[in-house]
Image (cartoon, rainbow, N blue to C red):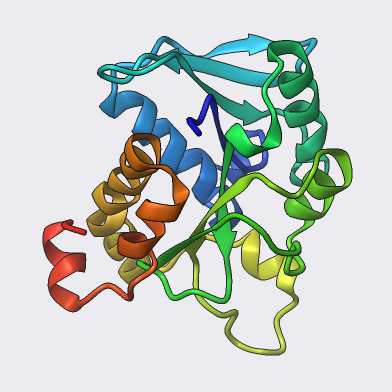
Length: 203
């Protein structure tokens, strides 16, 4: 199985760019830049921004940033999969995960939404057989803060430093998924990163 569509989740608008909820946008932007993908273009019918590239020895991969708000992310994915005839099994969705520490990540091919509004909508619109790349944003603090305020808040300076140091690992994960598929890639990706991994960006 090969992947044909990689989706980064986030909210549109400059006021949301640096928020925890938009880490999916940040990762897919960096991935597009790394591979020299085409310029992002808006598709009003499919309700998203699109880019594309061809991996070495592979087939074309579409990159998508839904331009709906997070809780309607599935609409753009559903329309895109229908238009390009892409089954859910050939889709990777990148999103924020509060149950992982900043700098950690995890890949899965099944499971529920875990309280993530974007995932709730996606699962309601396509089969839940897509691959998930969850990027850790850490548990909310203080505990009294609402989840919405936490995910729509910005990373601390310390967390931003760690995100920057971890970005190459996130991109390497996507490359590994494209190259090896989920089953093989998960063996490497889902192990807990050591301190050295976070510092030098190696898997």
